Amino acid sequence: MRDAVWWFIVLAEEENVTAAAARLHMPQPTLSRRLARLERRLGSTLFDRRGKRLHLNEAGRLYAEHLRRAHAELAAGEQAVHELAAHGPRVVRLGFLHSFGTWLVPELIQRTRQTDPGVRFELVQDAAETITAAVLAGAVDLGIVSPRPREAPVSWRRLLRQEVRLTVPLTDPLARRQSVGFGELRDREFVAMAAGFGMRQLLDEACATVGFEPRITVECQELDTVAGLVAAGIGVALLPESPDRHLPAGVTTVALTGIDAAREVGLIWARGTVLPEPARRVRALATSR
Image (cartoon, rainbow, N blue to C red; front, side):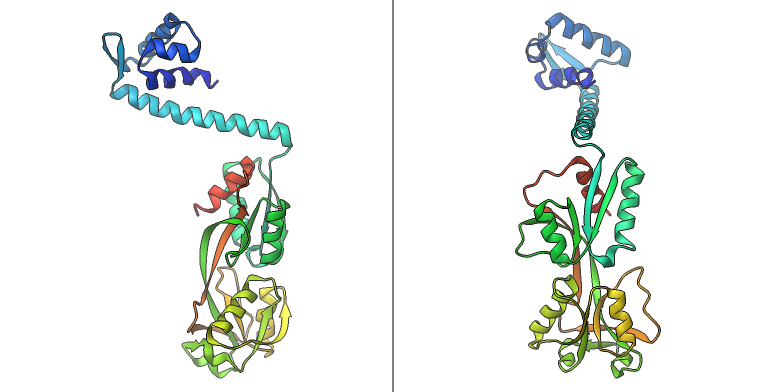
């Protein structure tokens, strides 16, 4: 199928029937007849003839541009079929943080299946460090994590930036404030995510920025649990703003100053790895949102 367009691409590059025929390993008269039939069918010349030399005219340049795109798509289609035959079903193994499981990941899967219904997903939810390790081990193709891994040899593309706010009970005096300097929290007790989670790393780094260690009363593995513990008066917490998060009754959030109160969310994959075609498609869709 690709040969049906490739001959014209070669002729457009060479602008010489003899040279193009040699590259295509076909007789020169055969190539000349193909060109003549094509121009008759299109009702337009595609080359200006100057002696034995051909020069693409405007119509020829336009036609060649479209054929190059068609040739690339045909090549991608053939590669996809080869991969399917070699590896079976078209599966994308995607790891992500728990907090992205109710909005970001479902949205990405929906967009993927709208463009390619044959793609199937295998999902893994865990802490950022665990997802990064799984990517490096080849256990998953892609990971959605926050913050960006600094030491691990992974490639990264930013997907979005989430504001991080202080979460306090409505009974807390800070609840009446428009903003709170992070240094004011030196003597507060925190509800925090366990070590290895991105929000825990953000808390530890924020505390280090202003010169204190957090006093953590409870560690957990779900941001919704963090919010519930804050509502119970167990401590204050840092939570990212999310389009799907509904805080429990008796809780509010306050803006923070004195630190970079935001987290970067991004897509990672093992550096230097050639991803399977379905994973490349998901990567392209995720980074175009």
